[in-house]
Image (tube, rainbow, N blue to C red; front, side, top):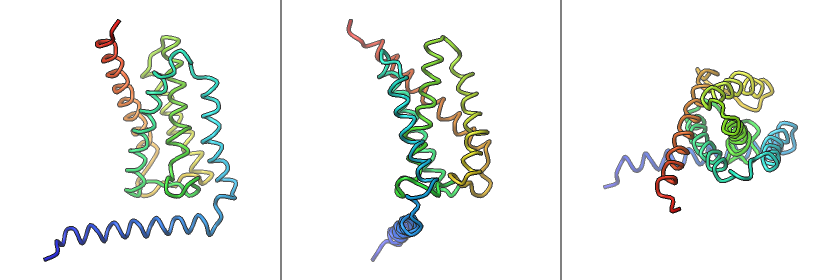
Length: 190
């Protein structure tokens, strides 16, 4: 006798697959890859990475790189949750299967990495400057992206929720980085 739970799960997976096929078709049918918005998203992916290459403190590159990677992964999970829950989405993705690629992989992590680097190198308060950066991202940068159609917010999603998401990301990334630094210092042979 077939298990109804697994049948229902398989049906949900098929629906997700069909939804992704529809998004891919939309991307191709409307030639989104030829639009101004697409190329703006491409520049938001490539530009920050080039800038980071020149501005990152090479003496602490693994430290800041680890922190940035933590931001990338955590933000990616939150973004995936938000997208799958129908809270937000990206009408002009670089790659339809990875709609948040530009912001998750480049712009947001690079921004936070450089602010973190600045706070460390100038002995400034991490949380104060990260809260300010999160506020700028949530209440200025994201509304601009919404206004020009690069992000769509759905339901009750608002900028306060986005701000809270940023605060969660910066707190977890700092904690993870601190744990690794503490572990390294404790067990480093020297």
